[in-house]
Image 1 (tube, rainbow, N blue to C red):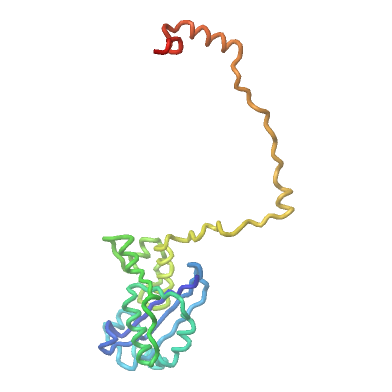
Image 2 (cartoon, rainbow, N blue to C red; image 1 turned 90 degrees about the vertical axis):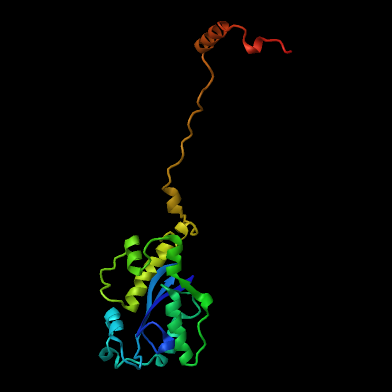
Length: 228
């Protein structure tokens, strides 16, 4: 099963108010194991970067000035994600910007049925706890020491580990679906079984005598009574 974990960085909170996507990072999982295949790109938003947003992700106007516009990389992005489920933390935010950019390019939006929201999963599994990406990394013992600022690819890589833990950890199948390979050499190394002599459970003569003496001391035993 192929899945894509992704994260975005933007100029703000609302695409409808002119904010734009400036970075996307995608991590490929197959059977919930990272394959090493990633997609990562920066985009020139065509508008100034607010200082508040820059303080979060560190992407300045100068850094983004020579980056391509989103529409120039859209085919590579869509080819990478394919028709796989898309996993994000607070996924409605990321889907909102991704579909907003696709719509601005005249492309069809990605169906929300493909959306998997790890924030909703975390709230369901750990109600009352903190559900930020940092908090979940701490809960699951995931190293986040490189996360000084938000970064789409790094956050997607961390989220991939969080997602696996939310799904039950790296215990997929326990390897029970793969039949062991048995060869002639394997069979020859198996020690032959040794038949054990049957155990005897019959009482000895002395034990029978002791039992008879005990029974003789019983007064009015049940088995000696006449049926009514």
